[in-house]
Amino acid sequence: MPEMPEVETVRKTLTELVLGKTIEKAKVWYPNIIIGDSESFCNQLKKKKIIKIDRYAKFLLFRLSDNITIVSHLRMEGKYRLATPHEEKNKHDHVEFIFTDGTSLRYNDVRKFGRMQLVETETEKQKTGIKKLGPEALSEGFTLSYFQRALRNKKKNIKAVLLDQNVVSGLGNIYADETLWLSKINPERPGNSLSCDEITSLYKAINQVISQAIKAHGTTVHSFLDAEGQTGGYQKYLKVYGRAGKKCFRCGATLQKNHIAGRGTTFCPKCQEVK
Image 1 (cartoon, rainbow, N blue to C red):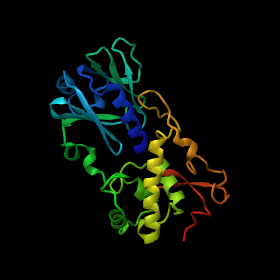
Image 2 (image 1 turned 90 degrees about the vertical axis):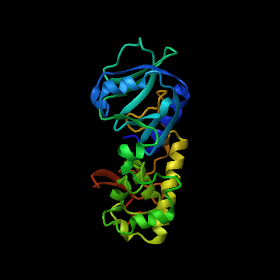
Image 3 (image 1 turned 45 degrees about the horizontal axis):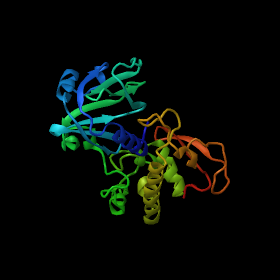
């Protein structure tokens, strides 16, 4: 699933491709992608101009004229690409925005898990899945003091805490493993067992890894592509994710992979020893 760095990369490339374009009409080939009535969705988009593309955690926010916003979640394999209305439809193309300049933007999703919702601008935190999210990494709301308070009563393992979008949003399996390795914390440690120093180390690691991943245009492990069809680059810098059975870059021990918090989790049994 695309995590925060990947969605930020998509946001940047989409901004370059479609900012300022006006939607002549929209087509929905698979209505379940749309939260709400798909016909109403299409009708409300006519003649709307894309004035900005924002992001919150893993959600894309297409800001349109007349104070409306398309809230888009890519889920597992959702992708956008620039096309033309006359281009043959791919079997996994589910939504198309046709622009007045003769181009179009298509949403492609092999698994059909992605969702779009049209809301009044600035109501997305009340009316969409964003309302359930905690502050995202690198944001003003994600402070060390907030993170310390958030972990205080968390009895579940720290890997599960990091995947809980209510605590810090935008992290998924890849960056949870990477940040725990960087901060030398075992993924099975209860969240409330971490010392102040460990929480500080983890907090810094989260911001560092996310920042570096954004600069590298995200991570492509399986199918992630940006809106220009380009892969990410952070996979070249992964320290543990996808490296089970190989030597730890830090101590040379063999990396292990266990099923933790419902996800395959790779860690170093020596560097991240349970204390």
